[in-house]
Image (cartoon, rainbow, N blue to C red; front, top):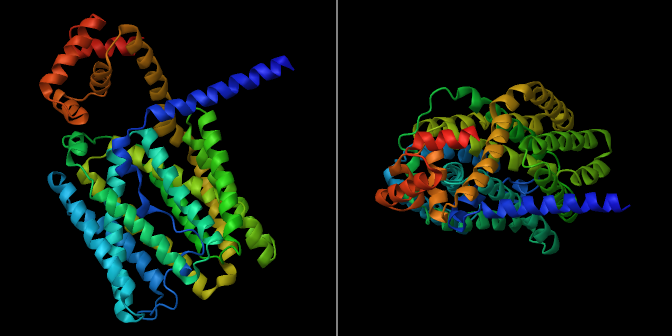
Length: 457
């Protein structure tokens, strides 16, 4: 019994230490890049309440058209950005998006309101492109994980809110209004200096490293889109509460497993496979209610997919390649809107079966790709984490000051003095001053010797 108690206490201490290390990596000034609410997933049932009895165009559902417009806007509007003017462009686009949203709300239901909604969706998509750029290029890995988690929590808490405070047909508009409010506030705080480090970034030889993350991103979107076209849960309260339980469980598993993101990927696939099977095998009402208790696994896919996407975009692309990838992944994902949308209209009874088979096939492909994924992403991330622990110990041994630690960290990433200055918001002379002090304390004379010293340990 004492041995069991000691082991349990040790695990608890390790878990708390992991949570504390996460907290230390967060930078409060980067919260504007973490709140990517314009990319918040629209959970099942929300899209149907967005515009009650909205006026269709060309016989097509308004929500369907808005979804397509949103995906096009992400790549199309961000394609015109320049690094020197990104902050000004983001502010103008955010204000225009907010104005269009208000205009859309006040119009009576009809063709003009639908057109306004489509234009709003296009602008919201453009804002999403900027938020994804900040999410990928201005944050560290920990901040990306927390940012994606906050966005998922936003959706889950809103589910609970509308369960306790029935809003009826207005729930969708309130949900989008919150997205607009937070996104506008964040984009108006954009800072061009936060992206100086990607100006001269090399992107050669990284194609293989992009593929695994893009696959999981598409797999997550395909599964969630299929599920969103199924009838919604009769109880938002049960769905929201169970989602929070699943969310908490997966975060604990993630931290306890020393930040291995692939556990979250596997949990998402397993959970959503079970959710689709429940919808397929059980009777309609019982299947919907039971599946709503496991549907929270979709949020784990959201966190993992955007974490991985942000990770590879940050490490392996520059601005030009980012624009191309952004246009590709979101315009290509139009098929993920169109296919389940048409199937739901033509053969709704086939949706559970097709969704189940799609989820299982994507899960099998993910398992088959696991060696490649581990080789290209996870093993390297794990090695980097171990290296960072060694670096922390060495930094402690040499007695670097707080500023010297920051400069050394930048130098070990291969940054120039100019890039270090932009990253830390100090002058190049200040960077050089702290670098020379660090060299003296470590008994080295150059950056090469410093890197060799840390790599050899």
